[in-house]
Image (cartoon, rainbow, N blue to C red; front, side, top):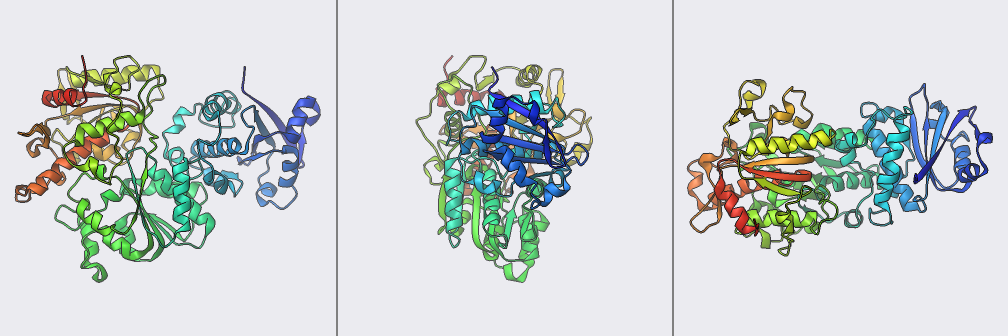
Length: 586
């Protein structure tokens, strides 16, 4: 039986058409029941989404002449959703925010112009958490998904027939009006209540740091539209970040979304500077792009050693999203410099894992997998005992010993490239909407100019030949004919969610005389990812280089939502090390 019902009505001269054809139960529901409603103008193409407990009265309020958007939108249809699960305000807030998010993604190119909603929706959702009401999962599977795919899509209210097609889009993943976890909600409140305090928000890959960023900015703007906010993002996320705030109607002259280099060059002062992926902020040095180093030519910043140090001079309050395990190049600000510059900052941890989803019915969780990967890669580095990362040594090793067809983790001991491709292609046969990729450490030589030459391949195994990702920017949406066949590097997938991933681990990781993991620079193919020959003489730099390589694999191994398989690219040593370290049994 369906867990939702809907009523579709026409609108003429501000009145509802078809009410007299409804049953008494339907008419009473429109008067007194919780509901989600969507207005549509078939000629104006405009949409309005809202929630109410009294739709008939709410409709009259919309058309009483005080709401400009209803005076000009020429709405001629409305569809009203009811469900047994919409019995409380939190459920209404959640469903409303999800539909607004999905409609924005569905109308990506025109959402800001054609989609509107209650201006208070951000305030409502920012105060609710994803764990505050029962049956939230049932709402998603029994109401939102079938209503979209069985009603809205067939009737032409939306363009995208399946929600799965939308869920990997940035507008959905980072929507500033989706419900938050309790830890995220409390953290936003604390930051807003303490405008003179600086924060470092520590979080593993997939714990919602960027989602927190968009919600924080939205909440600040709602509280104070005159607040000057600088949002620092990586170059490959600059356009996406601007689009998100624009689409959701939060872009104004006081909000600037840009890179650290551009923000520093313009030299403006901000009430708040929020930095995404602050572990990737650059430092002064020879391995740096010329434009990044050029900021030190500005007299006021001549004595600064990193972009972080300069940003601290430009913002009254600094909020840094950070993961010590995702710095991957000598050009990134060093851990010691970062710790020195943030010594007086309030340190917070995000612990809820959003990206990785352990299969239903398993005894292990996504946190067990992440903790196991951390232990595998970093157990001899000293990082797991620091205050920079969240780690639980009592992780359930069953996640690495699960041999069932639905296991989250697994690995291939022979023909790694063939087997990884076969595994991902079989998944696509059953789940065509999945975005799957084979990824690899920087274990085969490549040049950036190779991207425009599809005939140049880098990975060869028997009759298979594959090339590196042709571009680092928006690679997942590349239009190349062989896009899905390309092997992804860390530069193409950092910050990206994939459904299933295969990861090739190469000879850039080896064991030292103590049986500890060590990076091999001779098998690592990225000149900007390692120190020069003279610098590598220093044991401290050797250790840092090892961390860079470990971090690359950590990033690659935490991309998959639904599963991961490893393949060992001429590196059976690491396979044996993994089996021993994680107590993997035959």
